[in-house]
Image 1: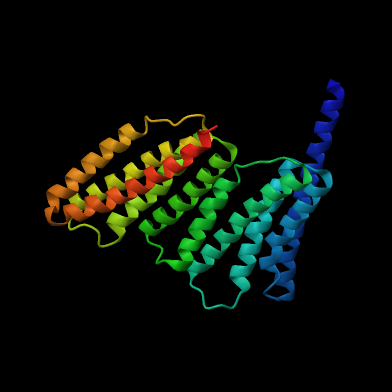
Image 2: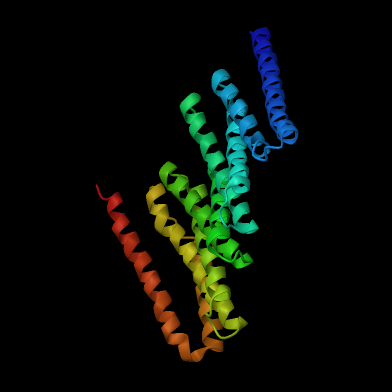
Length: 282
C-alpha cells in the first residue's frame, strides 16, 4: 500500500513538472515569436496560452494544484492581454484595475473547476477574488484614493465573508464579515466626505459606525447559531457612547440630528433581528 502511494506521488510530481515546463515553453515561445515576427500582439498572449496549457493538463489529470494554478494564470493572463491590446482610452490605473478584475475572475475559475472536475468545494479563493475585484472596480469608478480602496475592499471582502458564513453557518466568518463592512463605511464616511466639522467630530462618527458592525454580529448570529450571542453589544455599546460623546462635544448644533439618524439605523437592525426570531418558533 505504501509503495502504491509513493508511486502515485512520484507520477504526479513528474506530471506537474512536465506541465509547468510545457507552459513556460509555450509562454516563452509566444514572446520569442513576437520579437522575431514583430507582430506586437503575440507576446501579451503568452501568459494566457501558458495558463490554458496548465489548466488543460489539470483537467485531464484531475490534479488540484494544476487546476488552481492554471485557473489563476488564465485569469491574470487574460487581464494582461486585454489591458495591453484593448484600444480604449483608459489610464494606466484603469488598465491595472482591469488586470485585477480578470485576476479575481481567475480565482473564481479555480473554485468552479475544482467543483466541476474534482467535486470539491473550496471557499478560500473567494477572499482574493473579493479583494481583487473590489480593488479593480475602485480603480475604474473612483479617483483611486486610499480611502476609496479602504471602502471598496472592506465592503467587498466583508460581504463575501458574511455571505459564506451565512450560507455555511460559520460564525467565525460572520464576525469579521460584519466588522469589515462597517469598518469601510466608518472610515470613508467621516474622512472621505464633508461629514463633521473637525477631526474630533469625524472620529466620533467613525466610532459610532464601527459600533453598528458589532451590533450586526448579534443580528446575524440568530441565523447561524441556535441562539443569539450578546457579547458583541458590549464593545459596540462602548464605541457608540464614546462616539456620540465626541461628536456632541465638538459639534453640539448637529448632535441631535446625528444621534437621531444613527438611532434610526439601530432601530432598523433591531427590527430585522425581531423578524429573524421567527426562525426559532416551532
